[in-house]
Image (cartoon, rainbow, N blue to C red; front, side, top):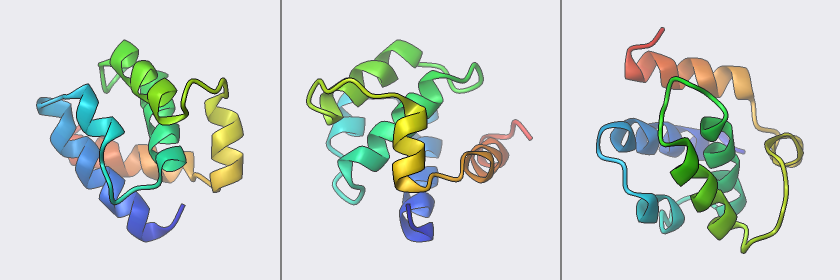
Length: 95
């Protein structure tokens, strides 16, 4: 995951927190599907974002039903979980 894609994802997640639409997660063109699926699975596993089931559904759609875990995607994408979580929490006012 590049810093550019991370920045796009942070902005997207910030806007979706208040106006969540599952279809927006599966059709957000600037981000590669596996990166978006990783973010969906990450956020589905935290208690401070909400929409866990919708995020799991979006991840499944993005991965065309393939079974995988957040950990597997995070390693493959070099997803910096602590940095992403801290940055998003700051944006959402949870820090």
